[in-house]
Image (tube, rainbow, N blue to C red):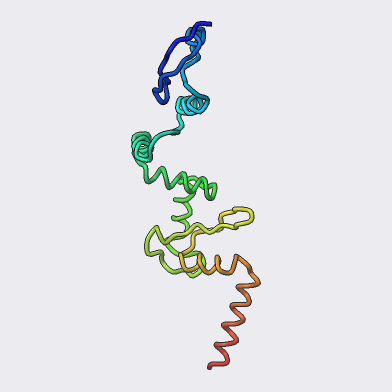
Length: 157
């Protein structure tokens, strides 16, 4: 069994491997972890890269990075494509679906969705989004809030 010295293709560390492995294309990595990283890297994953390198690769791969990241967020979080989101924005006519106030900016638009079945309900402002969140999307809690406000507004007038 003849041994040869090679440099790992991943970490460049010198290691010993069998000569027949080098002839068959194996024996490229010094360890299983280097082999796993090398394999993942060849498949296009950014394993073992610094944050700076990953950011550079992302910018080169996606020239419209902000739009790409927004599209990925919408798809991952709500199952919406960017086109579906743009259609929702146009349909909302720049107003919150609950309080009907104008959105001050696109950052103020929140995609409202049912947390149980993840179904998208519409675009609402930050205040309405917080109100629904604090009420845990419970109709009973919101009705109790309305009853409480009515009770205290009637007694004060």
